[in-house]
Structure formats: structure tokens, C-alpha cells
Length: 398
Image (cartoon, rainbow, N blue to C red; front, side, top):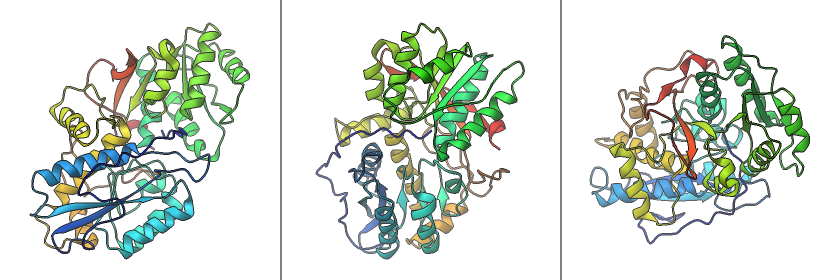
């Protein structure tokens, strides 16, 4: 579930030894190990999804690792390459990763990965560690080592949550773009396999539409008991507000990736009770690993936002740490080889990962974790919906 919020978030620059686009010796030479990440920390176009949350999560994780002595006696240096939401700049970032001998590229969200970055990283054998996967190509690449189910979990998980909740006449409203075709098919697969559920297909809308009234009318004409929305956060805010204004009592759904804190704040009371599935544990989880994440994130910056983007970034550093520990050949190829042979890998409270086995799925063979966490907006923030135990939705992964 990849949100396309057009947020002008500002990158918080801490006085850290983790340098953005600076750093020590290349790769694992000298006293440092150089890693990097691609991030949209500025916007070259109005469509750019500015995401500094992932950078904050990676910075927080590496700061904690370095403060504890680093890995194998070496500190980890981070280089952040700003792609500005421009595919050409994204490709340049990937070439830098190879040329400057980054040992790994860490978790963020890269909409241009299939066409711009993954082919370059594959050619250079650079591990793509803990990314928030958004496209099938990212679940297929030999250099990809995801921690979570990725954006697929946000949508398929939310559809499964609707079935779990007993929805009989669900309606899904999604953006009218080529990238959403996979999501429409996923909705059909989930609802079509559920007994007693009537689903008439997705209702499509154009992102950025000022007047959402016609779309809302089309959705409510089906008399839904449950209504899910997929698309940008700004569109979600307009849509849900219009649905409630029209008097609908349908239970509302959207993934946390769509309803970011700013969107929930904009919706106010309307956001209360909206449900959705997350590919990461909810920030209010009492699990010790989640509490450490929150502590380390706050220790990096009081302004850092705990959401799925920052959590995935943080989790990627923990996977990196395990891959580097005891590694003799501290190079991208050396790390790639070790990660590929690791099983029973525990990262926070995600289910254990086994990178030695692929999934029997044509589109998502390297989805090593198919669990989601069901949540609900309560008192202005996402919280666990019932149990904090994740739900495996592997049955819906085709």
C-alpha cells in the first residue's frame, strides 16, 4: 500500500557520525563500513512522495548500533542519496552505490526500483536490505531481502481484515492508474474467495480530484457495509469526510500507509474507528523491541515520526547488523552471500525470516514474511485492533 502523500516533510539533520552523502572509506575498508540509502528528501516534481521518515528510522538504528560499539569493532557510516522523486536521479543513486562500493542499500521506499535501481544493484551484487517493497519486481530480485510483507500487506491485509470482520458487501475505491491494477486484482482474489461476500469490482477515481462527490455517490449506490479506500492520503481525507457527510454508516478501511498522522489529524473525529492492516507492528505495541525502537527514534530526533516507514528503516539496520556480524568479507558481495544463507532470522517482533527458501508464488517469491497487524484509529492514532499478534495472510498471496 503505497501512499503518495505530497508532504513537504523536512529532513532532520542530527549532529551524527552518520553522514548524508559524506563518509569514510568505501565499503568495509578502514575503521568504518559504508552503507547507503535512496530517499526522496526533496521534491523535483509535484508528484514526488517526500519521505524523510525512512531516513530517520535508519539513522536512529545506526546511531544505536554505533553507540554500542558498531559491528566487528567498526562503525557504520550512512550515505543518503536524494533522488528528489526523479527516476533519472534514482538511477544515478544506484550507480553511486556500486561505484562507491556501498556494502548495502538500506530500507526506504523506492517507487522506481524495478526500472531504475534494482537492475543496477543486481549487476553490482549490492544487497537491497529491508526495503518497503511496493512492486512485484522487488519481491523477485536476487538482491532483495525484505523484512516485512511490504505494501502488498497494506492492501491484501486490509481486504482480509474486512473478510475477518464479516463484511458481506465490501466496496473498494482506488486510484485510476496502471500501478493499481495489481491491487484491483488482489481485492477480487480476496473477496472472491470469501463465502457469502458480494464484490462488484473496484471503483476507480483520478488522484487529486477536487470534487469526490460523484465517486462517493457511486460507492454508496452499492449500499456497502464496509468501504475501503486506496490512494493518496489527501484524497483519502476528502473521500472519507464526504462519505460520512453523506450519512453512510459503513465501516471504513484504509491502511496506515494511507492514513498517516497528518491525514488522521486532518480528518479529526471522522478518522475514529477507521480500520486497516499494517505490514509492521503498531506503534502502541508493548513488545520490548517496539519500545526500543521508539526510544532510539526519539533519541535520534524528538521530531521523528514513528510510522511504518521509520520502523522499516530501523528494522533494516537490525538485519544489516546480523548480516555483518562475524563477516570476514565485508563487501557487498560478501554480505549478499551471507544473507542468502541465513534462516531463523529474528528482527524485532516480526516472524522469523528464512532467506534460504522462496515462496511458491509467481509474483512474490521473495516475500519471506506474509504477516500483517490489524489496527484501528483510536484517539487520533493507530492502535492494535484486538490482539497484538500478527495475522498470516499467505493464503491470499498468489
